[in-house]
Image 1 (cartoon, rainbow, N blue to C red):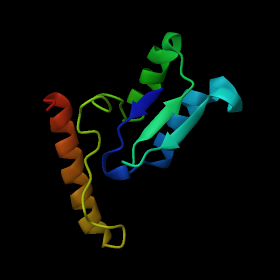
Image 2: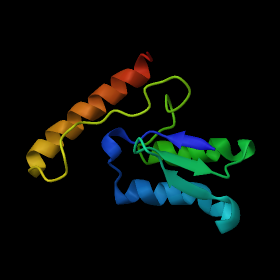
Image 3: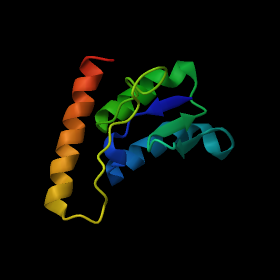
Image 4: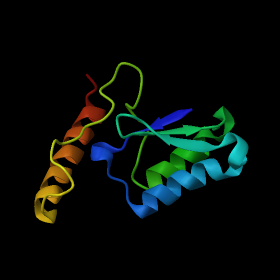
Length: 108
């Protein structure tokens, strides 16, 4: 199982496709993805031998499993809801992504 960071719970269609590509080789019986209670994603069925390929796909899509488990702050999110104006959401998204980037560089 591999956890993937999803700052603010925002994923693009391209990122969702990349997540699907990582588990597709394992078939419906083994490969699956779960959305966690913290708005992250858990990829199930991934073998250790295939981890490098999965990491390459995730990196190309701009998502990462770095600092996504153990005793780490797993997700950074804002308190603003989806109903707010797009410009405000974009500013919040930028702040969350900056905090997430800093956290990955300097874990708690």
